[in-house]
Amino acid sequence: MDGGGEAAPPTAHPAVQPLSFLLGTWRGQGEGGFPTITPFKYHEEVTFSHHPSKPVISYSQKTWKLKDSGEPLPMHAESGYWRPKPDGRTIEVVIAQSTGLVEVQKGTFDEKEKVVMLKSDLVGNATKVKEINREFKVVNDELTYVVEMGTNVTSLQSHLKASLKKV
Ligand code: HEM
Image (cartoon, rainbow, N blue to C red):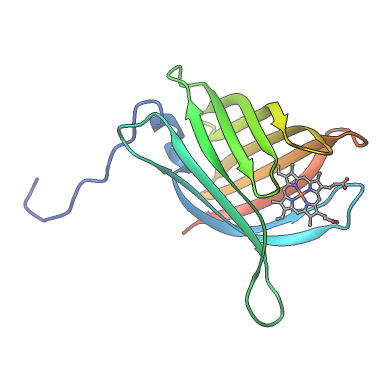
């Protein structure tokens, strides 16, 4: 320490370190669609937080619609835990959605490419949804993701895509 009074930033747990590119709060816009619904746009905030003593990232997401006047209108929200394995390559993610649907996602990540690819291992308490794929990527400080879903009547295809910036 040089006595400047600046605290060193906390380091991440070794399992979380390769996913450091996700950590923080991101805000931006997205758009959604599906063959059975009317396309829509939304605003979103996502936070990935951690503690250096734990091999896990806490995930929380909320979305809203901006109205012409008055308060923003909340849309979908979800939260969960991202659990990267010590192999530096594979990950499992659990997510609870505001709609009551729960997901266990399994997949891989690439520290160098700053990509995480997830496929549902379990979708629970859902009336229509059979499978969900999620892909996240950070390029030039921009977090983009796509979410695909398959339902009992529609094959796996895009439901959401969004682009967020670190705040
Ligand atoms: C519709 C699932 C995330 C907004 C739907 C439907 C399903 C679904 C099953 C109905 C499709 C149909 O009737 O065929 C999911 C899943 C999500 C997700 C699994 C996450 C993995 C979101 C998010 C938003 C959103 C983040 C908003 C920001 C909507 C809207 C509709 C819809 C506006 C149309 C509703 C309507 O027309 O009544 N979603 N959704 N969804 N979703 Fe999502």
